[in-house]
Amino acid sequence: MRRLLCVLALVASAGAAPAQIADGRILFCSTLGVYHAAPDLSTWSTHPGVLPSAAIQTVRSSWGNGSFIGGNSAGIIMRVTSTGTTTTIASFPSAVTSIALDQDANYLFGTTGSGVVRMSTAGGTPSTFGPFGATSIAGICRNLGSGDFGVITTTPPLLLASSRAGTTTTLSSLSVGTPTGICYLPDTNQYAVTYMSTTTPLQLLTTAGTVSGSFSLNNQSGASCTYDMVTRQLYVGASNGFVYRLSNTGAIQNTLQVGSGAITGIDVYDDQNISVNTSGAAPSTVPVTVNFSASVSSSYCLALSFGIRPALGIPGAGFLNLQPDPLFFLTACGALPVLTTNFVSVVGASGYKGATFRIVGGVPPGTKYYIAGAAVNPSLPGGLDISNTELVIVP
Figure 1: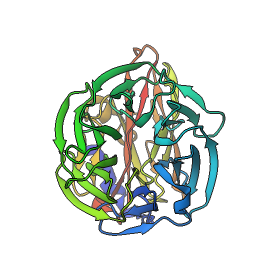
Figure 2 (figure 1 turned 30 degrees about the vertical axis):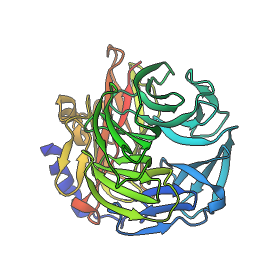
Figure 3 (figure 1 turned 90 degrees about the horizontal axis):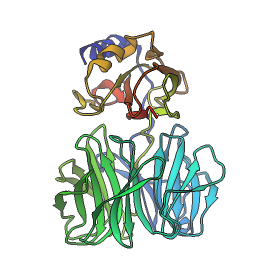
Figure 4 (figure 1 turned 90 degrees about the vertical axis):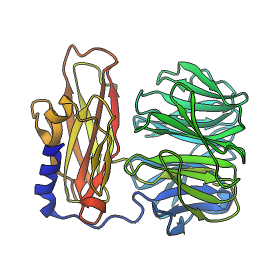
């Protein structure tokens, strides 16, 4: 931790370009359109170029290309740029309810009648994922702690765990109402689940399926949720057009009303700064793409860890979701050059940089490597642009 902060302090004088307006904003949609708001929900804007007629009902920020993916009630998947240019990239026979990313290499789409569908983020032919068949999926999210996916179904209402290979385990029956959305909270290792219920619109559940808390949203039903792992804020879209910002324990911080349509999809825009697209077989070299688009031409440093809890709190900037274990201290800011390259460097004018780390032979299958980092940006809180955390599991 001390090495990480010292290196960042030393390179801070390099400066940085002002943050792009869209980075870190809360992206959300309803039947009335697509919007984005400041993280504290103090201001909001209509996303340009997206018409209400598109009926986008779920959104997911797309890694590193200044766009997001939207799915609508007709089963159409669209890529929408920050300026509103919209392109159809796939079409399914039933409504798309949710979108998750699998190691930034694949999208997983939850649908109302076609189960879960997998498609490469680079394009190509979609394929069926897991044994869901025609099950109606209400939500799907990635569990960063295990590498699995949390899946909620509507008939019957269940919370399931699905491996990357599609093997599925039932965790819990959901009896308080029809589930509508799910997201993962890495710092507490829990799922947040929203319900079409005015009495219990939000629950926190352990990854084993046990309810750890139930919360009210001013007598409104829940429709969607997402989590900002850097600020540890939970955002919930309600059925009455309100967006709620809550702490990771469920305490309401503030609200935003946009309209009367249900907030059916919500995500943190352009929060994927670190990308890995590999299974991580040992021995191997893992390619890492770094994208600090809000901090172009800035110094950054990365580190590895075997865990994500407890996260590193950086005063004023937020949380770096890496456990400060021996691997972290060995690799922070390029301290182990034999196994890492470009763990401390400068991103280019586009915000991109390539890095690698080496998984040596003999590492046991199932070993998890986590990678995250931060770039220097004086215009951001605490002067740092903290990345997401990515996971590689040795098969």
